Length: 110
Image (spheres, rainbow, N blue to C red):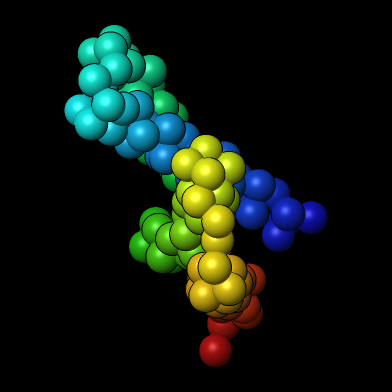
């Protein structure tokens, strides 16, 4: 159960970070409303708070989170941006998830 909660929390955290960065991108690159910066700032604040909810060392959380972020970003690329993922995108995402699992779920006492 710990593993599923960790992955779910990382996934929600990644979505908050991506939304927080995507909205300013829309304003800067696609001439959307500057008001998008308000939900972007809120989303980035949510992202930082969510990262703080993990009970393990911050550096370990940041390192492992990166693996889930990669996969969520690839899904965003496919679903939101409409870019078809390549076999290499999928393999890279799986490798990143494997790295996250090793960092977060391997025994810590050596």
